[in-house]
Amino acid sequence: MLTNSTQKTFFSIANGKIRHRDKDGNIQTYDTIEGYLTRIGRRQRDLGGHPTNVIDLEIVDGADNYCVSIIADSGVARSIICSLYGIVDFKGKTVKIVTRLKVVNGKEYTNVYVYSGGDQAKWAIKLPEPESFKLPTGETHVSYKKREDVLSQCIDDINARISGDSPAEADDDLPDDGYGPDPSVDEMAFLGGPAPEEY
Image (cartoon, rainbow, N blue to C red; front, side, top):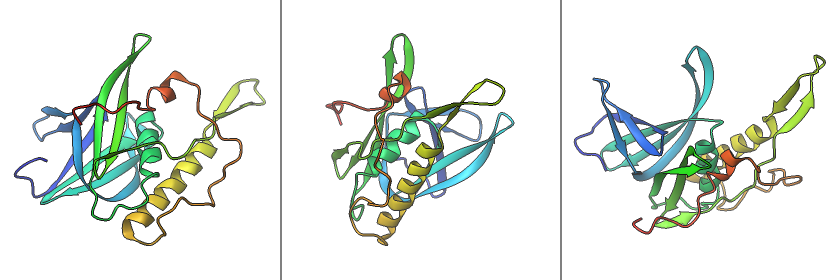
């Protein structure tokens, strides 16, 4: 919980930390953020001259309003959405996001844990693997469209559960054939694992 905040406070997640940049450009970092999830928004931002899809986790904690912005096709976003999708009832339960820095083969990754009502939320859906195909030029193109479509549907379902517009169960309309874990190191680094004992 942050104190003396009556306006929305914006955060990002990077380098194993939840980060807030103040108006003077100073960065404060946190290991956790907690409150009631009110919605997941979607928008485009111009990052480095490139239009980039972003998801916004809107969180309320008393008088504090937080917005955690995450690049939509990042491993952090996938981990959070797939974990939130397993929560069937958001009513009266806070959501806590815990971040850790993880090193795999000398490379650093952000490891994310999601909790609901004090219990760790596990991944509730396996995402389709990327599809590769040859372009007429002979180059190989990798498509993430199926994955993006599934994550978009998950966000819709999560928002419906938060607003009380859907039953507390997984959506049977999500395709379930051909799914499997992505074997890349990047994906596996976000699968979580045993919860940190201090949380």
